[in-house]
Image (cartoon, rainbow, N blue to C red; front, side):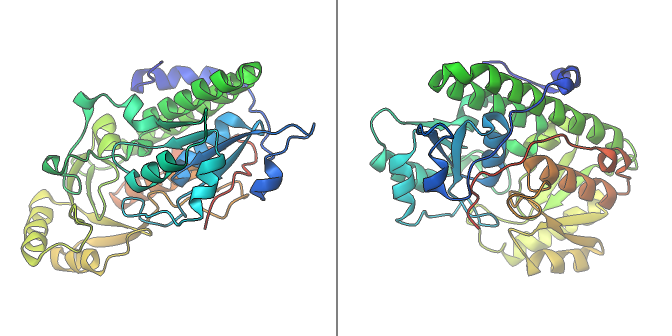
Length: 340
């Protein structure tokens, strides 16, 4: 499997002339399983919305794609409803993040897997155990590494490459289309990478520091030279204790962090109170895995989610997002099914 680390991203812009196969699956899963020639399409189930978005970018209209985890839901505590079993029992491929993120869904999938179907834990495949990150929300003693690889562009490309390989093995006649779609997606991600690196250089020296509610940016921070000072949410996903809050307030003051970041997925009155106590601004709009817009709109994609988050973090820390704002993403329509 090819690994696309930071040094490889800029070169991928050369693939920008390649076009993606058009997406055109129906909003109704039963109808979308049937191709235009009357044949039955491969059915692919995905878990979190970033994974659904990447799968759609690679697959185009050649397979049927349906997500499982509703957008804006805490994927760490998500328990699939019984009706999800029907989708899992009909899927030919089930793409999950892995790294202990979706264990209840994996258990349900294993119990309902049809003959010949497969469960692919993409994050577990692309991240060697030696590179696991454990942190505030994901302590090593709990045995669950931070699973948020998709917030780092280099891993978004690696996810796409795994998807390309799996789909090409299933549908070898469509392998050239999957390759072209992958190349085009990688080129768009390379644009994003270049813009982030340009814009983060505008942040005042010493300000590339993150305090968040949920620690979703550990791999991004490691790759881009940021420091994660702290995350408010403990591994239990409850509110932090008063002692933990007090320690974070002191740490924020000592580090000189100018703003702390919350999430639409994890609204937190505690984080706002910490900001007030520490005398720093609280920005509550990071999206984590809740794609912008609504399904079917152009901005409803992982690329736009990452653009928004990076822009919000960079401007909040005193920089400007000129390069990020200037990107024009060239992506096809995405008609995968996203539960809301």
